[in-house]
Length: 212
Image (tube, rainbow, N blue to C red; front, side, top):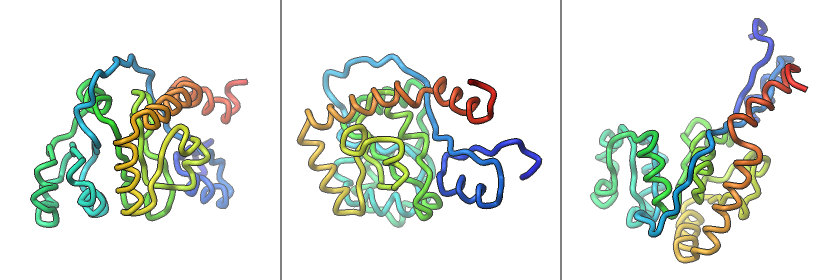
């Protein structure tokens, strides 16, 4: 690794690991592009989850199966572990670009479930969070202490800790439109301030000493 001038990671834990190895490592969260946001008169979906299947995701989504719509690949591999109710909520294909934006912005809650390797290490705020915020969406994600470094929980993003908390938060925010929309606006404003790709690139260059 010493052949590199610098190492950047979106994980605080990984960054600190490299630093303990005396490497020139920097914490560098994701960002996203700014987007034109079209007002949505009526949400089509209560809760949307976009991502590939893994066991933890199946386990959590079973608890909100009546409210969630799922897009992503490899879900049919998990069919034997899934209830018939949850199977009916799966559109087993990845979505990108304009289609992704249309689906996310037409949903009341964008649910993020961190993949098992990073969740187990309690680190790494994935790209989906920034992507959804760039579209003005309300984001509900599994709790990780690093989130509080990047966003104000309850003002710009919401988190859940375990199954019961997930169910309670989903029910609460589906029935409290003003609170949900307030947090979505807060998240979008924070994204514009700190997490556009332009801002992230400037931060990276500054850390490398290439930008004053």
